[in-house]
Length: 318
Ligand SMILES: [Zn+2]
Image 1: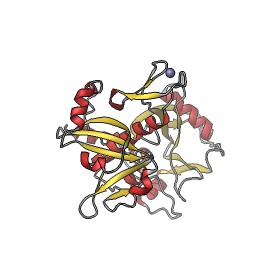
Image 2: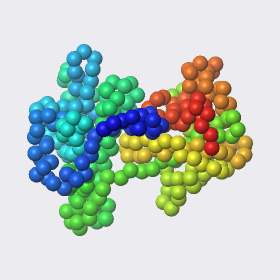
Image 3: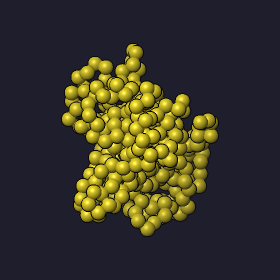
Image 4: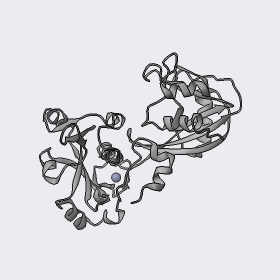
């Protein structure tokens, strides 16, 4: 797959976005074909123990998410397995969920390295094109772990469609992996933008405001509602900038720039501990890491970083 067009998209600059697997949806309901792919010698498998990705040490400091068939068998039994698709070289790719209790034992093995998903992306410890498939695998495996019973009748469910569906053994209902949209917006007013912080953020870090899209509203309406609820700001025009798969546990972040209709900010102090208008010059200092008070923007993997850069560096406006 030629990734040149992908590279030009702002979405492609966000963490978890680069994913070159061909998902081959047409094979998911052909169990014999998928089983044959699973046993090919060039098949590679990503493993997650409960919540924790399991990485393989290569030579030196290098790490990879991909294990061979034999290496995967040495990790432990699968609670679930998903067919992810085919790599660019035509080799099959799968994902395997291991019992969370195995994480502690696997940590002791010198050929393995276990760390949380966020750190894998943030610290760039695996090749860039492995972060997206890992996020995809983690999101779908998490979904399996959390949907063992039918939302309709409470009966037990089993995996189907090579891991892309759960089927109720009692009422026959079919359930599919879900992706929850979250709007994240840089609200601007002239040559300033609103940045705010939650108490859980690292000291000095300010970010965009965000919130889940609710049933019955457009993305633009969700941006306007969240801007009002979190910052007391009425917002007019909203424009889409970029999106990001965000597997914590299963969101799609929809990044927008929005135009405030007034100056007065009234923060929702149950969600935010601070927030204000930041002039563009100050935002540039934050991006460059030279803010006199040590204030900073979110790191490269976050779409908030993409939004702030688009506005402050590339002069993207409504
Ligand atoms: Zn059911």
